[in-house]
Image 1 (cartoon, rainbow, N blue to C red):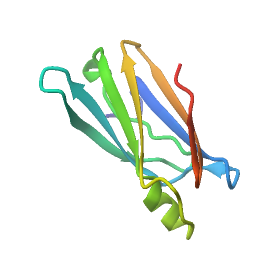
Image 2 (tube, helix red, strand yellow):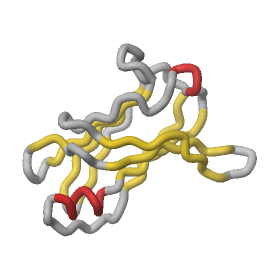
Image 3 (cartoon, one colour):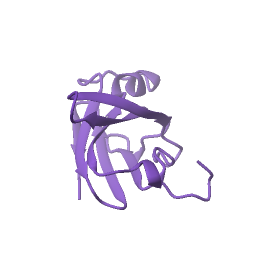
Image 4 (spheres, one colour):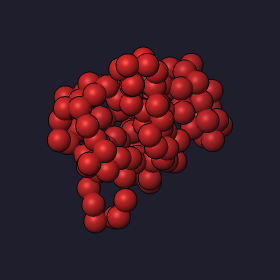
Length: 116
């Protein structure tokens, strides 16, 4: 995806424990195959210095359906020499929106997500 193209799905992770963006967190995007009832991985990414992960999916691939983002929280906290309760966090969203933002607030023992 070119840098000029805007992804219709975006996320931002905020490390509210330390008051900083959740930079360099690995994550993956999945879509539910409603016929087989299994999740298919669509893409992987890492949050940037602002805690954002642009370019997860192209506009033409973002069709109505059930999506989930999986955040690799254990490796994020380990990289900060801290322990956490959750090894990963998954956030699901049924979407027919043209543009969807999933903001997340993260602490070592708490994860909060605001879905529009």
